[in-house]
Length: 162
Image 1 (cartoon, rainbow, N blue to C red):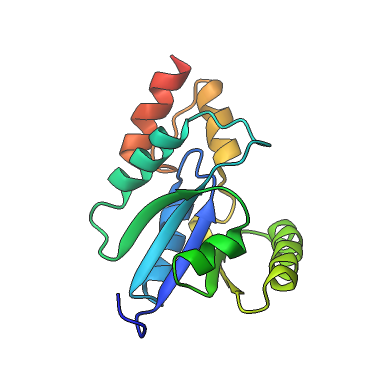
Image 2 (cartoon, rainbow, N blue to C red):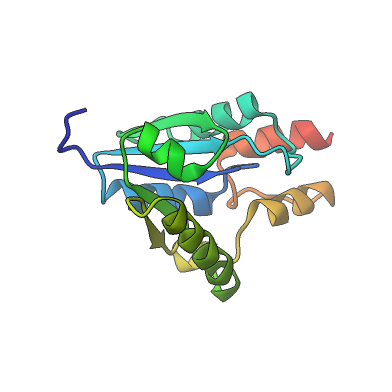
């Protein structure tokens, strides 16, 4: 990577990755030479999938996309952004309720490091309602999540809930 390469950081828990996440990843790739999908290690959350499973799920789902790198991190997102050589964090916005929380997080990140900016991307309308919590609840109740998550995530979810 040269200094002129545009690198963006897309952090999240991705538990599991959804087609909405993939939509944001594809949109972000239109803005960057390289997109780092950063899987957060957050002791406050109790993810269904462990870190290695989430990384593998994302790797499989993005294998045909050039310019995607998957990494894990813990600590402050702004610190990780600078560590990987970017000043831009990508966040997906589905609804007004997302905006309020994401806006607060972006302002907090700016306060922590004014050199790092947040770029908000909206997913396609068909994914505007979609989130990982909803997907897990549908599977837990015996529903089909094909068309909401990549095929490898469907398989991994079924294994977790069987």
